[in-house]
Length: 615
Image (cartoon, rainbow, N blue to C red; front, side, top):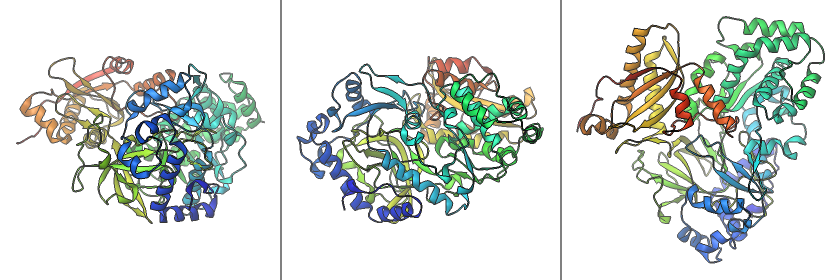
């Protein structure tokens, strides 16, 4: 079997049959993937440095180092400045894709090559047939899936720099795609291509309201983006109703493409529809608003795992718990990984089946005996013999994901529903590249492992010997916020390590909506939350706090409502992507983000006592 000659253009039942085939032959598929990558790229400068022109798989595993972005970044910068793409890939690079930069630092630039869309389409074609096994009739209506593009820039040598979805939506593969009843979007393409996110959001929501009785699926890339749309709707519903009532588009819409598309949809006044929407949005509570506005909706599609899990209560509030939350696939800005074969699983139970034809997978073991510990630092050199192959991972164990991606001329391709590229792929010359995601093996689908996403390992707070990762922080805050139940609602949070004084201390920025404001009760509750967070942090943190006194009391700074929306606006205005935006879980000192947050603080609260700790 030659994986490089796979037919990736499967649809419907054929896509499901192909899923069964490749997962049943996971080891064989992986062997062919790596052999094909080495055959294609053995003469690149990067691989010749370590393999001297060899295409031997064992030589690759012995000699090619496990790397992070900082190791490959100089090669990418050289290509961006005009050097030949043969530095890292056997095929011409056509554009540069940029990550969101909100998972743990600055945006990453990833050169891309052409001829990758088939693989992406394979995953894309898998998602709906899988979902349709559990929720029939998805081809009988429309999809309200909110997507946005942003303005592109270019490298010194003229290569375009785009976000992943911007690249896809500007491609012929999206604009000239054949009609697909499973993906009949409410949003006209012109509204998606509008670079003004405010006008784009307005028009996409207006279109979704016009089609409200036909909508079968709701969604956005991340849960945070979908909730941002609800927040926007809360502010603009009256104006949207006026457009529907009169059949005339608001003068705030100045983008020509949006004007043309929406004028066609607003062909005539529709006072009955305007009255329906106005009555629903005008109710005193928006609990269950999604069910009321889009009564045929069968599920909400968005990333709700990892740090996005904190948005689940808000989504359940707006859907009254009646619309399932579906997280269909696992992907990153570097490459795509797998699908959720049980889409109706609870968000806490979601696992992803890694697709062995996506790239070559390897894994760095973390911890021992089924417990998670980070004994390999982010910047530490990982011995080549430490990593294990896809089919050799063990149930219940934790691993960090490492990938070697496609590059060079190739007829196959990936897919997906959330983060897709365009005619160009997102994969080029990443050899044994550390993604930075921590996964736990949760089971197997045929011979392919299934993983639960745990956290990003490179997002940490640290003052002294303490090291708090994203999962630890999220878990402690999730437990602590229970102190607010029936009194307040934690809308959003981030953190930073304040080392401006000695000892330094953790600072949490919380945006809270109080149900019954009471200054004295607020102080007591926030101090209880500070205590609860510290009690849930690990042994070393509590040792540093109580015994060593090398970390000061934890602080919660409460910020004004809307602060985190301003933070999102600022990041997007500086080049971030609305589609890919995730609230940064840790901000840097002396940064513009920290300055914005500190400028909106309404109250500061410290832990009144030391956390529990014993030798």
